[in-house]
Image 1 (cartoon, one colour):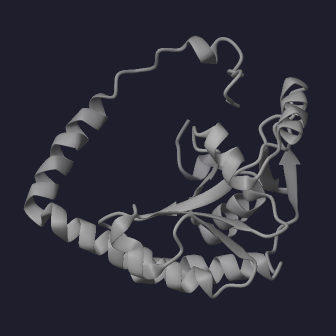
Image 2 (spheres, helix red, strand yellow):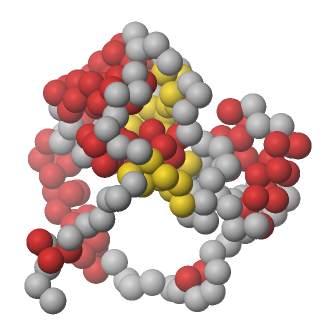
Length: 204
């Protein structure tokens, strides 16, 4: 977690790892640049704005959904294709886990490398921030405030937004199937009894 006064990093050795050069990423970047030139930047902007407006219109109609930032679909061209949300009275990490495990929908949650801003956006007081800090120092990340966000790109469709809203509505109505447990050290939720059989995907 990061604030204006301090930062807490991962334990060794992870925090010292330089990482592997992203060779595949460089090749992919060249391909993407060609694609953008082919499709046209304005077409991409129009598509993202259309999806953002569509999402905002649908999300505004959902009870219990809190949208951060400009909520007016008419202003979609003046913002990025990213919408930060919360569900009232639900942990952002829990909502994200349910969307993933039960809806196959990947969202990002937390403070998005902007801890001071997100804490301000959420109205976290300095006293509350200090309490969170105490938990983190005690290896408990389950109280970190945050939101979850959806983002749109050239490849996304309105049908995907419809599916997201359908699964989110199921979450809001508490009709999800799993019983979710929290891993306090990681601040993440997972369904009880869940395990991945990697032998289905890999030959060891």
